[in-house]
Image (cartoon, rainbow, N blue to C red; front, side):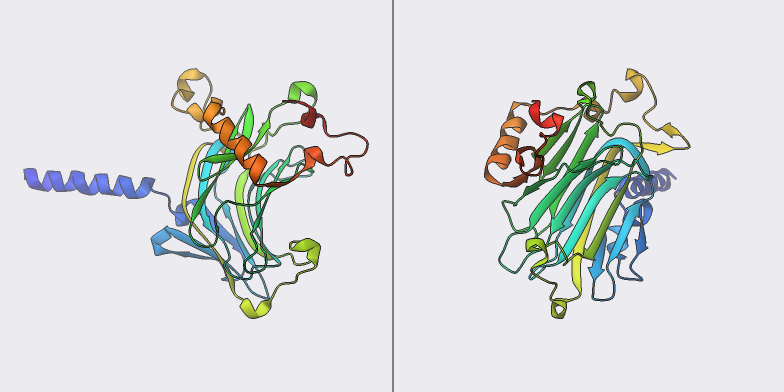
Length: 284
């Protein structure tokens, strides 16, 4: 009798462990692509495919209002020129908010370009672009977004590459009131993605495949007009990410990336912003 009780407890514990593990079947819906998006390995792996007829994409079932969100991606290998793998948070409507990772494919041997952007109240134009310090097609790497009321931090394998601070007090809109879903898509953008559209997609290499695993969201889920985080410090004392900021080590790593791997920064593009740089560019 005792052994059967122990077995029951173990079975229940095992069920809880499985239920709490990241599972693409539970967390995401494949939304387009006519079968080109697939959930595999009992929910542990998701793949998107692109061929000449169509790309594919998915979105999260939950909406979030602030969170620390991780996803591991392995990008299209080989000649990926013309392709874009987009992974981002976005709300809906004409004054939407959005936080973007976009991976711009390239010719074999040339590095991917990681394109980032932040939209608030329907306005973007805040692009920063980077090379990566590894081959993002050879293995999975973790791409993270920390989004709290004070800042947005983009990170790669735990290394911050970009910080966008809340500067509302200086008239800069900040995403803070619109819940966002997670989206990802693999699609053909050879009119602009690679060298401004000079390099076209080589369809003889199709289908192109991007892979995803190990999704994790420490986040406030938005449902029926309310946040799962509740209100008050007692409800949020286990959510340190809600007030997380860069420590000195992380700030140094951010500077290292921006010095060595940043290839475009809107805040230095005086030709584009001939009437004056956006206000956040002049603030620390």
